[in-house]
Length: 119
Image (cartoon, rainbow, N blue to C red; front, side, top):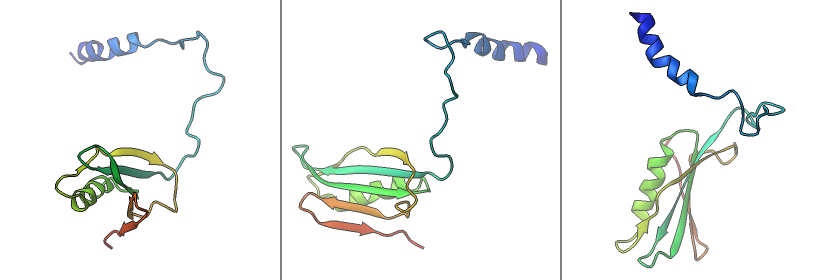
């Protein structure tokens, strides 16, 4: 019974994968991460007016996924009723010195505001 069960699910996935690349030859060296180790989550959103003009950019960086909800929360608190927040742009970066949980708001008029993490 177990043998039939494993053949049913495993075999099609193994059979569908090709052993060749699109060029027909394998790559010279295996593709690997450039810098293994510590990575930081970067979340960015923008405050826009009703004409979709950017008013501020909000960026948060931390090694905890909680930075996503915290960055979105800062945007919701900073925007006015006629303004909107864009969708979060999330990326992984390798930047130890900036990965401190601080959320920075850069307004288009040049002002900067900071939200520090709770300790």
